[in-house]
Image 1 (tube, one colour):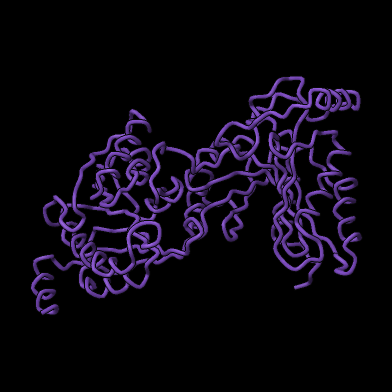
Image 2 (spheres, one colour):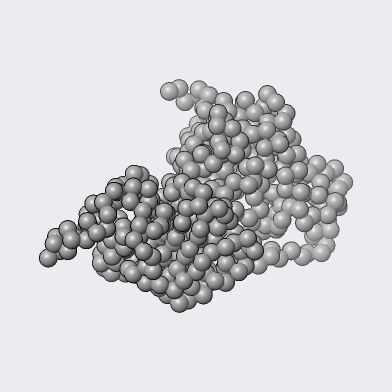
Length: 435
């Protein structure tokens, strides 16, 4: 393929420019769950919507009146408006010449007004995006005279909420750069080059900590994608107030639940619920199902109780203190099991997993409904899981395996379906085999 040929992203962006009511957006998603985000997107918008899937993100064009539906998505972490997509012919010899290409593009070619106006309307920014020179000079002078810096709210890592602005405030911004590929320039140098030109062009105030707008520039090979962050806070920050050592992101919980395809009236359990993130997400999304959670550790049960009480009055979950190897259910009772198994990294020990995983799978085989029962199990310890699956192979068949990134750890999601073998049939074979 010719290096200068139009990429799929450029084509998608060009399509968005044809209609003033259409915008190109990108959403980030936990690596490995991209298809779940694609499926949710098609459910919420249109099954025929064109989506470009890349590692950890998806791109698509949406109509202005569809933004609310995108913001309701539960599989994604962050939303950005794509303001520009273009390619460059880098010299690879002169850093200054290559950086000048970015400056020239911002100054002469980038037309960000459409994306900026959309960002303002979506985020509720009340200040001035297009200040005059006098307004900018006064704001810069006042800032130097006051010599004060607004301290970000504790726990907030991404500047200030745009909706908290006053009408006379000039936009404060910062530029960050993410770079993939071999270049003679550094990411910080690209951010400075583009940020400087944006300031000259729009007369914004540079602020690296209490900004309202973050411009994220992605340099992938010879392509530059300029994005405006919409989500002030990642969407995975929901449901949980009391965190444990291995609390799952809400977006991961949702994607795990989607893989189980819950139906009306299904009994869903999380036998190792930790802080309760999976049961809470299940109760909020699949309210017509019966949700149960439990854990062997009293502190985990207490944390889950706190999070259930804080999450929502509509969040109905039965919570118990139990032993995962001896669950208080009769045989063939449960429809769906979704859980985060002990990794042996931040929680538990991998040597213990070899025994524990076998006990868990056999117990799940006992309580799950033959033929229709399904499990979605997340684990880092693939080896222990494979050994356990060998022991319980007559009870389950693997329908899907996903490689995912959980907190920087390369983990795996196993989607299992219960076979038609009854537990009573399996038990004598299992005992005989182990003897």
